[in-house]
Amino acid sequence: MPVSSGTSWTGDGRRLRPGRPRGWVGASIAALVTMAVLVLVAILPATADRVALDSIAAHRTGPVTDVLMVFSTIGDVAVMGVLAVIVAAVAGWAAQSWQPVAFVTAAVLGSAVLAAAVKVLVHRPRPPVSYALVAAHGSGFPSEHAVRAVVVLGAGAVLGGRMGSRWLRAALAIAAVVLTALIGFSRVYLGVHMPSDVVAGVVLGVGWLAAVRAAAAALRDR
Image 1 (cartoon, helix red, strand yellow):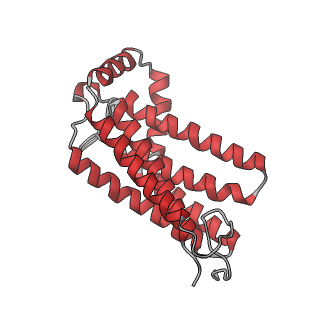
Image 2: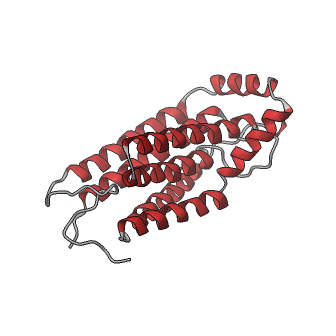
């Protein structure tokens, strides 16, 4: 696919004027706000987490468990990886440019590295195994399922929304939010994450996607 020339790419096809620093400022603000919120979530008392987890576990039912296991699987690395490739390929073909591919790649790989780093730094254990309905390993904070859902589905909504009408943009945004919420809730329901783990995953995903989006807006074609 040929790279378009003569325009600066923002991730959604808008033209930028040279030398405007707004993109880098936006990326910096997104990164700082994300870090601040993550710190706040990490240091919150665990009481509310445990109360919410107990309440959810007490109201589990077989049919709901089956459905939420499907949504948990959708958030797995393999499924989200395939979806990310599809999003990048379709958006790149539609734009006749490699820039959407670079945007999705930076968003997905960067968020994976960042989530792994936060897990190591915080090293918060998952809920007791007595809550778990599925196998899970490693630290719980943040939920990587939530991070992946936000970044992949969010990138799809941003890029896909530029291919159609206002109604399509709204539909993609709503679908991304609903699916992300279901994936995140499924991890709490299945007993492998505290609610704050999922909140942290959403915050990290939104912050990183916003930072990459803003950084892309600051770059100019050479």
